[in-house]
Length: 266
Image (tube, rainbow, N blue to C red; front, side, top):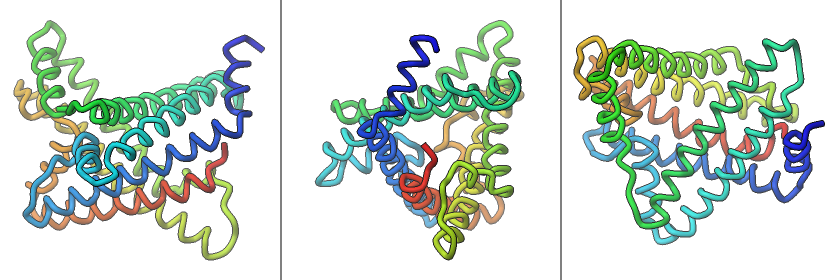
């Protein structure tokens, strides 16, 4: 076994590290519940930034904000390292399947790291403007040779991630990663997962579509992160209802993350 894989194995064999990684699912759940609450507020005529930056800012404004932010940073850092270790130790199936698992685990690790970085910025007193950064990045791409093609590719990848969430929700594939008990608890956890994965998948897929629209129209203002995607849902016919349902689904996904902290196969 290589030195890198040996280090990954030692990390996964560490009980304290496993506890920290499971705590990462708890803080991930808190973030999604707050995010879902913001989406519901927008659907009912309120305001707010409906993305990870907005959720982190909401947490910072609570009495226990600083402590919660640092807990978020630590938990997501542990979860990020755990996912990287999963990628390094992927050993099931043929080579193509192993690399598929590695790509998925590394992509998940990158997502956790990005959210953790947003929390770290807030914990240090800064503020993340993910929407502005996304539009600036899109404008730079559109102004560069081949940028339109690249922006379409980015949008399609993001949309594909959203579709993958929907697929995992519909097929209940996420349950394979859980050591669930039998009985009513199993049914409740699976139901939370189905609803949560569907809601998150819709929100992410719409975000990817916005990138494609921005590239086709050569209008970087059309591109945006999750906040732009959720506002785009609100602008559709019956959009307020749809956004409310997605927001409620994100809250359910947050509750699913709590159960994942307990039942995840690690």
